[in-house]
Length: 213
Length: 337
Image (tube, rainbow over all chains, first blue to last red; front, side, top):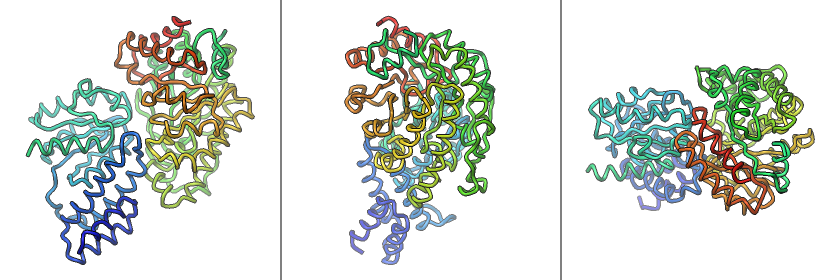
């Protein structure tokens, strides 16, 4: 199977065409292309393309949601529920903090990180800080990401790092993002990184993954 | 000049005695008045009382008969959760509760949910302070309401997977928006602000705004003007640079711009439309009064020769804001008089 077949998968993902993307993934599997190669050369390549397209000025959730939905469907096709996932870049715990039910941004980050080869544990919305940190400990996460649309969440965000340290997780990185939180500095939120966009957060995770190696 | 005259002067690019200041104080008025936020958003009298107290305390130019972003969806059939001292949020969207578009009817603002309480707040505010101060109501824009009726992800995927159904949903949302806004004008607001954050280019591409949202906004604003609204005010947060040029076509007289939009770019995009903005909302919580004063002064300087400007934050002043920062915003304009 030539590289052009993988490019067809990449293209259908970038078009947000989930049916075509699954059809292309099926063709690749039928031609004995390995699942891990489909992920690295098809899905991750599409995410890299999308990343470079989505500069901060041209970033809209709808376009990313469409690509993300296609990526998640292809992942489900390659690894049906119950199938062990391939080697990943590491586990990231995500959650929208207690008092906030706006989880659209968090769900988009989940799709992007999955497409970029991370394993994501989603703690959902209205999530207490302790639950996030418990999940991080249990899942041996390398980072925790919190999102927030409300400024009233900031006192909780400031507690995340402290709570991680208290539970012996000083080494894990804390990321924050979302309309309210991105107005603040990492220092004022007491986190390691404030992501302007979902891809900004993903780039930071790629960077720390390399450093950890 | 009183506040109303000052704002009208700004909208018409005349020279006011000083630049008007509209601080988007919504839930912050409740906190200032020691009223629980969840009670405030359910009681028209409380809203009016707290708004008037905040007006007396700060001395800015507008008050708001405004609750939160879930009023319309609740009145249509969604179920909300109310928690102490928080804005309510949607527990289950009306369309996830088995409703379909054909079975839904446009809520009657005099009967449905909290709409009558909002109208009550409007009436009191107009009676008590509306002779001199701008009384602003609020409706959700069609795009934002569609997302509040269906849930954001479902609505956005519907727009792509079944654009015809989505267009019908937008038509319904527009009818709700228009009906509620007209009732507010009748109750006494000088204008209902159209709050449409989900139409932001941060959420949907600018082409989407042009094709889907612009025709709906035209209908909404035309009906408000016809009913006697003193101006049409559109509030879309986030990086709106790409959609600002469409605002005049929609009939917008006052355009809010957020902190992430360069004021000079906004001026270029809308040379004949009054602008309001754009101090970062979180600064009202985290910055010092001196910083707010400095930022306000910079903005006032940038608009000094233009006129057509209302000094404001880029979006809502957070409920937990430091009152000294709101005072600094108001004072900045008075000092520059």
